[in-house]
Image (tube, rainbow, N blue to C red; front, side):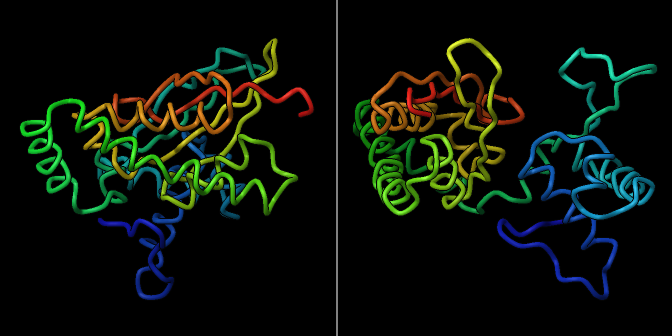
Length: 228
């Protein structure tokens, strides 16, 4: 079962497959989700969502996890959440991972780590370039929200979550990484993105997790501006 990186199959002859693709994309864009959350967001019944989730579990596209939070939701066990497996993410990845990895291996062999780092910085240049455009054209957005627009445009399915902690920070969440497989071997790609975010905002940011290292989502903590 394959999913296009940017679209889902059109409804029609394969209605179930189309609906399952919607379920998968919702998890991709919003992160690990409960069946109830998926049902509400997709305007489906919980029973229908569970049926599709059972199918996706059987295919190895999603996996069931215990919720990360330990907060009680009343009596009974907290609802389980469903997250994409590595196989599920593969359906959205570009088909040039092997070629890109081979090119970077060659660059590392001929130019050393410094050459790989320079390549990673040049690739991450889109962050500063596009951030300034988005910030100028949509001044109502917070810095984190503007960054989410920039990363989403590049295929990262990014959003922002506000963290209720002292010092007020936003969490930039990238639910997808189009270069995850290559970045697993060459973490310089992730490091360059973090450096670019810090540079464009003029403040230190902290990368908490990356898909390339096996986490379910890439997360970066961004301090809120004083006026925000």
